Image (cartoon, rainbow, N blue to C red; front, side, top):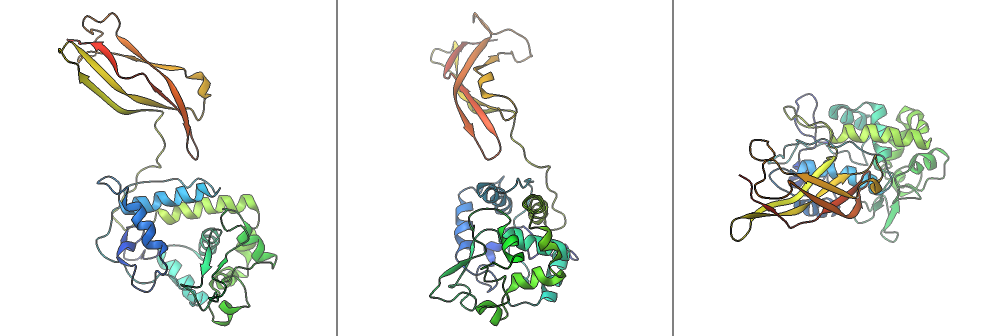
Length: 317
């Protein structure tokens, strides 16, 4: 996102990262391996940029964080974006200018850094001036795999071991304690407000959605994506040998998030002719039943899956 320039309308979440892996601003192997993983899902209808945004939703939710509403419609860049990814050695004023260029206030800058640094670590292979080689890596907080408020709470209460968030240690000595510079830029007012767990969660939901919705001018995003209430999956109608009957195969997924899965035992499909009428040829019945085969769950939804196929029906006219 940090390539965005709100004044010229270029850059943002546009997939340009794939062309920027060797520009000196995006260190570490994680960018390349992530893009390789997303490449398995790249289609004419799912751009790298949209997959990056989807990855924010999936990673935050899988680590216990809030729902980040996902909109689609991002367009992939065909070349590298502008320079300007924030670097740990930057001054607080430089950070403010960079985030202002991206379209974020000083408060939002602090919030985004805290929300982003609730997960993960700083690695010596990429930042030897901050983490000694003998140490290897140092987490941002004591729960580096959980999306929670500890990055803020530990900073405020003075117990943080975040190598970017202290005013002592190798990072500070090298002028690379960027989290401290950012958090302290408003006298710690914003980061103190994020010590409350609910406030942290709600704040991160807002600022991370704004982050993934930063796109070049001219790109229009859809409304947030929600699961279909009823979704046919792999449905196929095949003419049987002899040409007098059809075979229907596939399954139907029903969203049960707001109703008990036990309330669905089967789904009845009623046949209609090409004119919307009830003629289904010589068949004794114009319906077929799909029975419950199992249930499934996602991060935020549950589903019942029904199938009874293949099932033969008489040919209609």
